[in-house]
Amino acid sequence: MIAPMRSPHRSRFVNSLVCSLVLALGAACGAPPPPAGNGSTDGTTPANANSAGPSTPEQTGGDPAGASRKDLTVLAVGDVNLGRMLGKRILSGQKDLPFRNVRNEVSGADIAFANLESQISDQKGQTEGSSNYVFTGPPQGADELANAGFDVVATANNHAWDFGERALLETIANLKRVNIQYAGTGETLDAAYAPAIVERNGWRVGFLAVTGVFNSPFETSPARDHVAWADPVLVALKIKELRHQGVDIVLVSYHGGVEYSPDPDEPARSFTRACIDAGADAVIGHHPHIVQGVEWYNGKPIFYSLGNFVFKQFDPWTNLGLGIRLTFRDGKPMQVEYLPVAVDFQPKFLSPEKGAALIERVTQLSGGSLLTAPPSN
Image (cartoon, rainbow, N blue to C red; front, side, top):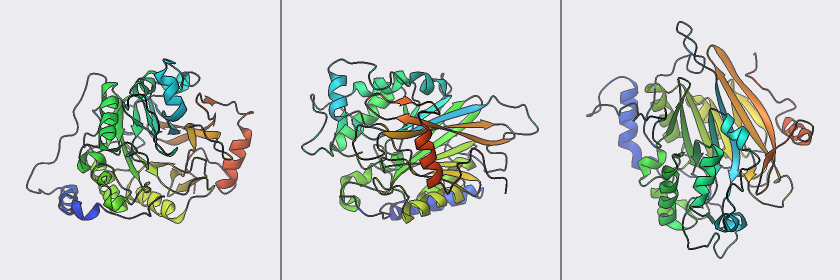
């Protein structure tokens, strides 16, 4: 059962919200602002480092007066489930199994992102619970993600608590072990709402991840202390914090909507538009397990659902997913490429000819046109 969307965390963040608002106005709040992030030798900032920057018209267009940076490409794909039968195959020693056919595309992006739909934990060979709707990938799943070239994953979703707190913390530990950043869960609630920040080619990209659905009543679940909920007020403040501290691009991962529905529901539309209004450059959606349409809202794209990527299902349209490649250039609008995906234990990107049916469907769901750049008007 999916619990209805609510805002269980807002009252717990009243003081930090006030501090954030005051800091955004340049005043003090009893303590200095957090540092801009902890650097590392590979050019990234560790996952869940609170870091942000001022919102200006040039945030995604570079500094017209300065030297142009190298273009930045961000590849985003849909749901990745490393549990169930696939988890058993990984445990049997079948390394390089899930991402063998997509490594070139994933590793070829400057930053690669996915929604990690399963926990990654050691359950003594178990990869699913008594219900088919409870599952976990084995620890080696983190190595598979890293070897494929993924840089950051969203961990806020309705399966973040499938095997409980220990598995959630093990998921985080396994991702840290292979140097994959994450957003959406944490040892504390503050950590769950903290962004992952990746630096590439002179760009700083902040990822936030939240869920608006859960598999039990979220308000009474102990998961509420470890999983970021899709509260538009809290997320708006996090976006503004990122802008205040100098992050160039803000991407929000939203887990919500109705499974197998071709259209986003009203809570999904309302929340994702609020993210754009707050300053996000794009919202990347998932949970329906099928691809939904794309909306350009106030000149920024909302990808309501990218569908599946590594997730074996048998309902209509779950076997076709969508990848998106976002290209950012100094002084120019964001460009979007739509990459059809054949979903399976081993997904692969499809040629334009083989992916034509999916692109036609997404175009129809997007109001009859699938834009690759902000509309001119």
